[in-house]
Image (cartoon, rainbow, N blue to C red; front, top):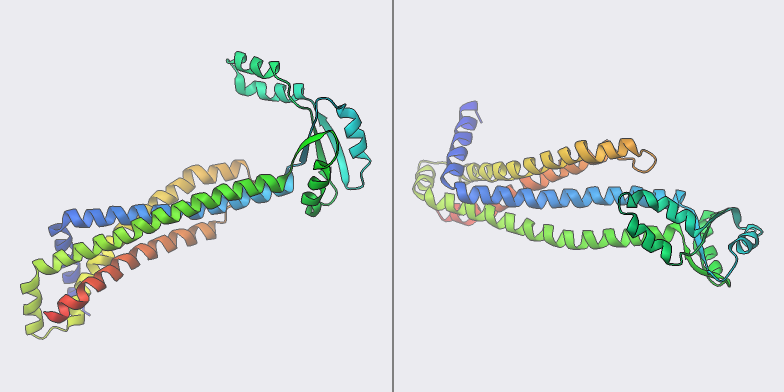
Length: 291
């Protein structure tokens, strides 16, 4: 195809989008929302994976002691266990002192905690972290221990929240995906009806149906490109100005792979363009053939 033909296709596509500005804008907006939601879900998944790995490798097991039992005695017993590497006692008062920072200017709220009985805790480092769950169950059965908190437990909670976000997010993204597909279909359908005479003339003078269809496929791809480009731009801005600075500040927690992020952004772009082309093809297949 010569450059003049490409120029004509681009000009005609721009004119077609202008004629159906409302439907085209709605399609672009829906594709933008769908691609943004999909991108955010994937970035959340990456973030949760990093945080979960950090929790499992860094957070110590914490054992809360019954107020009626001497904390130091329990700590001495635990220190003798073969599976315990180190023991550190954290009294309720020490916990309050750590929380004081968060109640700056609202000391009366902190006083309400002081009036209540806060359990002492013992922080444990186990020798074999792969046995953390088994060790936690054994400790829960010991007299004087009221609760055991361990990394895998926190990680499971975090992963559970993430799965719920992904579940509802995928449903919403799927809804907007099909809505955007339908809106592109409607926009191209309107363009076809508006240019029925033009299509018939082209076919009568010998133009191939595939060549005529190519014009509308290009319009659909433009709609998909614009919507996905806006989504990619927004997600890249979020990553560059929010997630990347956080990762640089806490490199021991987050380890975002730029290749993975770029792969996500590229996938969003391709998926948006695919929506535009697929919806356009479905819309034009029958009408151009009948024409």
